[in-house]
Length: 229
Image (tube, rainbow, N blue to C red; front, side, top):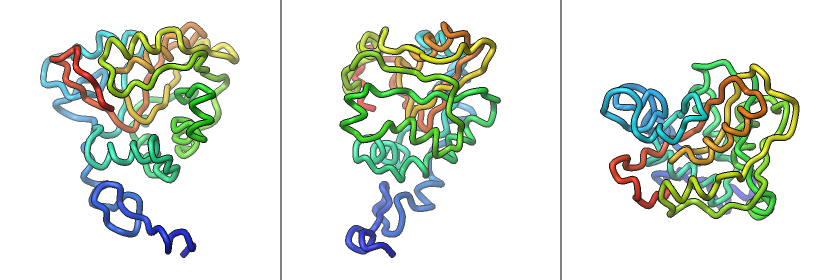
Protein backbone atom coordinates (compact mmCIF):
# COMPACT_ATOMS: atom_id res chain seq x y z
CA UNK A 1 0.00 0.00 0.00
CA UNK A 2 1.31 3.44 -0.94
CA UNK A 3 2.23 5.89 1.81
CA UNK A 4 -0.41 8.29 0.50
CA UNK A 5 -3.10 5.62 0.92
CA UNK A 6 -1.98 5.05 4.50
CA UNK A 7 -2.13 8.75 5.30
CA UNK A 8 -5.27 9.48 3.27
CA UNK A 9 -7.17 6.19 2.83
CA UNK A 10 -9.74 6.08 0.06
CA UNK A 11 -13.38 6.39 0.98
CA UNK A 12 -16.51 5.89 -1.07
CA UNK A 13 -17.68 9.26 -2.40
CA UNK A 14 -21.26 8.33 -1.53
CA UNK A 15 -21.37 6.42 1.75
CA UNK A 16 -17.88 7.05 3.14
CA UNK A 17 -16.89 3.40 3.43
CA UNK A 18 -13.12 2.96 3.50
CA UNK A 19 -11.30 1.07 0.78
CA UNK A 20 -12.26 2.52 -2.60
CA UNK A 21 -13.56 5.65 -4.27
CA UNK A 22 -16.90 4.01 -5.06
CA UNK A 23 -17.99 0.93 -3.13
CA UNK A 24 -19.79 -1.91 -4.89
CA UNK A 25 -23.24 -1.40 -3.26
CA UNK A 26 -23.25 2.34 -4.09
CA UNK A 27 -22.14 1.63 -7.65
CA UNK A 28 -24.85 -0.96 -8.12
CA UNK A 29 -27.49 1.39 -6.68
CA UNK A 30 -26.98 4.07 -9.35
CA UNK A 31 -30.19 4.69 -11.32
CA UNK A 32 -29.88 3.63 -14.99
CA UNK A 33 -30.84 6.29 -17.54
CA UNK A 34 -32.69 3.73 -19.65
CA UNK A 35 -36.02 1.95 -19.76
CA UNK A 36 -39.61 3.05 -19.11
CA UNK A 37 -40.20 6.52 -17.73
CA UNK A 38 -37.43 8.01 -19.89
CA UNK A 39 -37.55 10.23 -22.95
CA UNK A 40 -36.48 8.07 -25.93
CA UNK A 41 -34.48 10.95 -27.40
CA UNK A 42 -32.70 12.65 -24.49
CA UNK A 43 -32.93 9.96 -21.75
CA UNK A 44 -34.31 12.37 -19.12
CA UNK A 45 -37.21 11.42 -16.84
CA UNK A 46 -40.47 11.62 -18.83
CA UNK A 47 -43.81 9.88 -18.37
CA UNK A 48 -45.46 11.33 -21.47
CA UNK A 49 -45.71 10.01 -25.02
CA UNK A 50 -42.93 10.58 -27.53
CA UNK A 51 -40.08 12.98 -26.92
CA UNK A 52 -40.16 15.31 -23.94
CA UNK A 53 -40.23 19.14 -24.21
CA UNK A 54 -36.53 19.30 -23.26
CA UNK A 55 -35.78 17.95 -26.74
CA UNK A 56 -37.10 21.07 -28.49
CA UNK A 57 -33.68 22.66 -27.95
CA UNK A 58 -31.71 19.57 -29.05
CA UNK A 59 -32.32 19.69 -32.79
CA UNK A 60 -28.68 19.20 -33.88
CA UNK A 61 -28.20 15.88 -32.11
CA UNK A 62 -29.76 12.53 -32.94
CA UNK A 63 -30.11 11.69 -29.27
CA UNK A 64 -28.46 11.33 -25.87
CA UNK A 65 -26.93 8.06 -24.73
CA UNK A 66 -26.45 8.35 -20.97
CA UNK A 67 -25.53 5.67 -18.46
CA UNK A 68 -27.10 6.83 -15.18
CA UNK A 69 -29.27 9.52 -13.64
CA UNK A 70 -27.40 12.43 -12.06
CA UNK A 71 -28.27 11.69 -8.45
CA UNK A 72 -26.85 9.89 -5.43
CA UNK A 73 -23.49 8.24 -6.01
CA UNK A 74 -23.42 9.29 -9.67
CA UNK A 75 -23.63 12.98 -8.79
CA UNK A 76 -20.92 12.62 -6.15
CA UNK A 77 -18.66 10.77 -8.57
CA UNK A 78 -19.10 13.49 -11.22
CA UNK A 79 -18.43 16.19 -8.63
CA UNK A 80 -15.33 14.36 -7.38
CA UNK A 81 -13.90 14.46 -10.91
CA UNK A 82 -15.00 17.95 -11.89
CA UNK A 83 -14.68 19.95 -8.67
CA UNK A 84 -12.31 17.96 -6.44
CA UNK A 85 -10.06 16.99 -9.37
CA UNK A 86 -10.03 13.28 -8.47
CA UNK A 87 -8.84 11.85 -11.79
CA UNK A 88 -9.41 8.27 -10.64
CA UNK A 89 -13.15 8.92 -10.94
CA UNK A 90 -12.86 8.93 -14.75
CA UNK A 91 -11.73 5.31 -14.73
CA UNK A 92 -14.74 4.33 -12.61
CA UNK A 93 -17.15 6.17 -14.89
CA UNK A 94 -15.72 4.90 -18.19
CA UNK A 95 -17.17 1.34 -18.21
CA UNK A 96 -20.70 2.71 -17.80
CA UNK A 97 -20.01 5.24 -20.54
CA UNK A 98 -18.88 2.48 -22.90
CA UNK A 99 -21.99 0.39 -22.18
CA UNK A 100 -24.20 3.41 -22.84
CA UNK A 101 -22.57 3.95 -26.24
CA UNK A 102 -22.69 0.30 -27.32
CA UNK A 103 -26.15 0.76 -28.86
CA UNK A 104 -24.55 2.69 -31.74
CA UNK A 105 -21.44 2.38 -33.89
CA UNK A 106 -19.40 5.58 -33.95
CA UNK A 107 -16.61 6.59 -36.28
CA UNK A 108 -15.16 9.16 -33.87
CA UNK A 109 -15.50 10.38 -30.28
CA UNK A 110 -15.04 14.09 -29.51
CA UNK A 111 -14.59 15.25 -25.91
CA UNK A 112 -16.35 18.49 -25.04
CA UNK A 113 -13.52 21.05 -24.91
CA UNK A 114 -12.63 23.39 -22.09
CA UNK A 115 -11.26 26.85 -22.69
CA UNK A 116 -7.48 26.79 -22.31
CA UNK A 117 -7.62 29.03 -19.22
CA UNK A 118 -10.12 26.69 -17.51
CA UNK A 119 -8.02 23.66 -18.42
CA UNK A 120 -4.89 25.29 -16.95
CA UNK A 121 -6.82 25.99 -13.76
CA UNK A 122 -8.14 22.43 -13.45
CA UNK A 123 -5.08 20.69 -14.85
CA UNK A 124 -7.09 18.47 -17.18
CA UNK A 125 -10.25 18.21 -19.25
CA UNK A 126 -12.58 15.69 -17.60
CA UNK A 127 -14.16 14.78 -20.96
CA UNK A 128 -10.75 13.98 -22.43
CA UNK A 129 -10.00 11.77 -19.42
CA UNK A 130 -13.26 9.90 -20.00
CA UNK A 131 -12.47 9.33 -23.70
CA UNK A 132 -9.04 7.96 -22.84
CA UNK A 133 -10.33 5.82 -19.95
CA UNK A 134 -12.95 4.36 -22.29
CA UNK A 135 -10.22 3.32 -24.71
CA UNK A 136 -11.63 5.34 -27.60
CA UNK A 137 -9.13 6.55 -30.23
CA UNK A 138 -8.15 10.14 -30.88
CA UNK A 139 -10.68 11.81 -33.23
CA UNK A 140 -9.62 12.97 -36.70
CA UNK A 141 -9.90 16.61 -35.67
CA UNK A 142 -10.51 18.75 -32.61
CA UNK A 143 -13.44 20.57 -31.13
CA UNK A 144 -12.22 23.90 -29.78
CA UNK A 145 -13.75 26.31 -27.29
CA UNK A 146 -13.00 29.63 -28.95
CA UNK A 147 -14.05 31.90 -26.11
CA UNK A 148 -14.22 31.58 -22.35
CA UNK A 149 -17.77 30.96 -21.17
CA UNK A 150 -19.18 31.47 -17.69
CA UNK A 151 -19.65 28.53 -15.37
CA UNK A 152 -23.16 27.23 -15.98
CA UNK A 153 -24.05 26.02 -12.49
CA UNK A 154 -26.89 28.19 -11.22
CA UNK A 155 -28.08 29.30 -14.68
CA UNK A 156 -31.51 28.58 -16.12
CA UNK A 157 -31.94 26.94 -19.53
CA UNK A 158 -32.06 30.12 -21.60
CA UNK A 159 -28.97 31.54 -19.92
CA UNK A 160 -27.07 28.33 -20.64
CA UNK A 161 -27.95 28.48 -24.32
CA UNK A 162 -26.85 32.11 -24.59
CA UNK A 163 -23.67 31.37 -22.67
CA UNK A 164 -22.38 28.79 -25.18
CA UNK A 165 -23.78 30.17 -28.45
CA UNK A 166 -20.92 30.55 -30.93
CA UNK A 167 -18.35 29.33 -28.39
CA UNK A 168 -17.08 26.31 -30.37
CA UNK A 169 -15.23 25.59 -33.60
CA UNK A 170 -13.89 22.51 -35.37
CA UNK A 171 -10.39 22.07 -36.77
CA UNK A 172 -9.38 18.98 -38.72
CA UNK A 173 -10.32 16.75 -41.61
CA UNK A 174 -13.81 16.83 -43.10
CA UNK A 175 -16.27 14.52 -41.36
CA UNK A 176 -18.32 13.70 -44.45
CA UNK A 177 -20.66 10.78 -43.81
CA UNK A 178 -19.32 9.99 -40.33
CA UNK A 179 -21.37 9.12 -37.27
CA UNK A 180 -19.75 10.84 -34.31
CA UNK A 181 -20.23 11.12 -30.56
CA UNK A 182 -19.74 14.12 -28.29
CA UNK A 183 -18.51 12.86 -24.92
CA UNK A 184 -19.16 14.61 -21.61
CA UNK A 185 -19.49 13.73 -17.95
CA UNK A 186 -23.08 14.97 -17.66
CA UNK A 187 -25.82 16.33 -19.92
CA UNK A 188 -28.25 18.74 -18.24
CA UNK A 189 -30.05 21.14 -20.60
CA UNK A 190 -27.93 19.94 -23.52
CA UNK A 191 -26.94 23.49 -24.51
CA UNK A 192 -23.25 22.62 -24.77
CA UNK A 193 -23.64 19.40 -26.78
CA UNK A 194 -26.18 21.13 -29.04
CA UNK A 195 -23.65 23.82 -29.95
CA UNK A 196 -20.87 21.26 -30.42
CA UNK A 197 -23.12 19.12 -32.63
CA UNK A 198 -24.00 22.06 -34.88
CA UNK A 199 -20.28 22.70 -35.44
CA UNK A 200 -19.56 19.04 -36.25
CA UNK A 201 -22.45 18.89 -38.69
CA UNK A 202 -21.10 21.97 -40.45
CA UNK A 203 -17.88 19.94 -40.83
CA UNK A 204 -19.86 17.22 -42.60
CA UNK A 205 -20.84 14.76 -39.88
CA UNK A 206 -23.82 12.67 -40.96
CA UNK A 207 -25.14 12.26 -37.42
CA UNK A 208 -24.06 13.43 -34.00
CA UNK A 209 -24.98 11.85 -30.67
CA UNK A 210 -24.25 12.95 -27.12
CA UNK A 211 -22.69 10.24 -24.95
CA UNK A 212 -22.58 11.02 -21.24
CA UNK A 213 -21.99 9.25 -17.97
CA UNK A 214 -24.95 11.00 -16.32
CA UNK A 215 -28.23 12.62 -17.35
CA UNK A 216 -29.54 15.41 -15.13
CA UNK A 217 -33.34 15.48 -15.41
CA UNK A 218 -34.16 19.08 -14.55
CA UNK A 219 -37.82 19.99 -14.02
CA UNK A 220 -39.27 20.33 -17.51
CA UNK A 221 -42.41 22.04 -16.15
CA UNK A 222 -40.37 25.01 -14.87
CA UNK A 223 -38.44 26.49 -17.84
CA UNK A 224 -37.01 29.33 -15.76
CA UNK A 225 -35.76 27.10 -12.96
CA UNK A 226 -32.17 27.58 -11.81
CA UNK A 227 -30.19 24.41 -12.60
CA UNK A 228 -27.52 23.46 -10.10
CA UNK A 229 -25.81 20.56 -11.95
